[in-house]
Length: 141
Image (cartoon, rainbow, N blue to C red; front, side, top):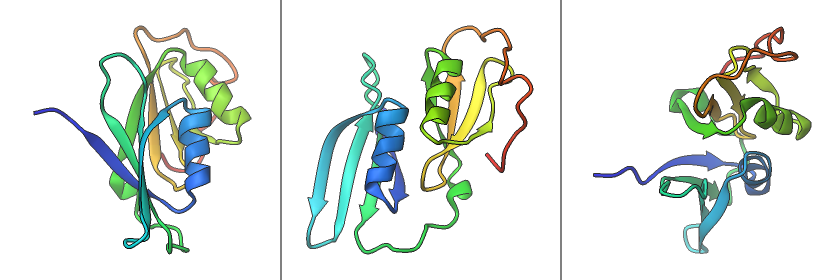
């Protein structure tokens, strides 16, 4: 058995792709549109060698209200090469760092659809550093 993908529903596909691709660094690898079903599926990968797991974004064209229960989903997690640089890039892109990487290892952010995204430092923890060290949590994560 092998893990294939996790799926999250998104209300604004462009905003979700900006977050996951432009800011987080995932790559779109496949897209399927269904006129009859009125939905689009977009599959994303990290692009890292040997990492074939995917994140499926499901955009239901007629969904106008925000989805509820995003916290009930749990979270998706990604290992990153430099958690501080990743958080800086996300913050510069307008993303709130809900749980800053005070420990040099773990942070949480939320996607435009309120999906909790955990970021974990690949390898050893980085030395605690400002501004993250004294930054408080914001909202839930």
